[in-house]
Length: 172
Image (cartoon, rainbow, N blue to C red; front, side, top):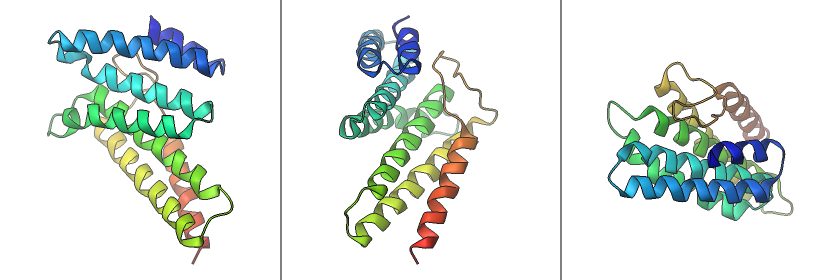
């Protein structure tokens, strides 16, 4: 319920309230995970993704990056094998896309040295490629993961990657 409430608040652009709800949801999932139920591992990662998205919308890019990276730390062991946890793949795909968006924001900031700007665009390309790779492993993605968390859109990630490729091509 906390995660659902956070999702509603995020959609309503009430970022601070959404962050609080997702923090509470993460804490609850973390407690359940610590009791030995691995089923909640991917939900902890999904909460981190939503915290990253909320922080991004609030203009808190450093916090967002921390949340997205924490989500990847949680999800990575679950997606490493040949039979990955599908909910963890959703979290990873969205965390990679979130880091890609943050890299685009960095690339668009002025002033910055051309090599720094190019590195930010290159980073964005890498994050979006990783996101699309995770989406491909899902097979037939939905807009809601099986654990109930809203998921991103691989088509949007593909469009973002195309934008990044154009920006990089224009720099040559």
